[in-house]
Amino acid sequence: MCSSTVAVVEDVKKNPATASEGVVIRRWLQLMVYNNMFRILFDRQFESEDDPLFLKLKALNGERSRLAQSFECNYGGFIPILRPFLRNYLKLCKEAKEKRIQLFKDYFVDERKKLASTMKN
Image 1 (cartoon, rainbow, N blue to C red):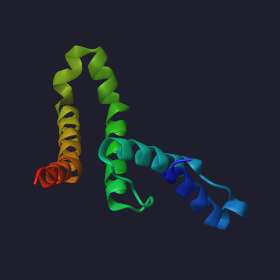
Image 2: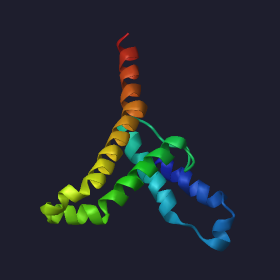
Image 3: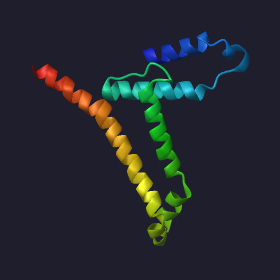
């Protein structure tokens, strides 16, 4: 079992409410998926659901999902004549994309560049 899976299982065991109230597995699964994905891509793991970077990534992905499932997206893609009326939607999509790119640049790309430059020296 990978370390993120073990950490989640231990976290569930420690929580006394799980015996009487049950567990919302989705939260832990999301943390496990993010940990596995970001460990593979960026050699980075999140300590808990309260990790500030995890919360930022989750919020950005939630915003992207909300925009993708919205009325404007669905009808604008199928009825091109509606696109001029969707400028605000397209602006929101562009802003969400720019936020994601900036976050990845700040937390992952720049960090990798620093690591690569120290390895060369």
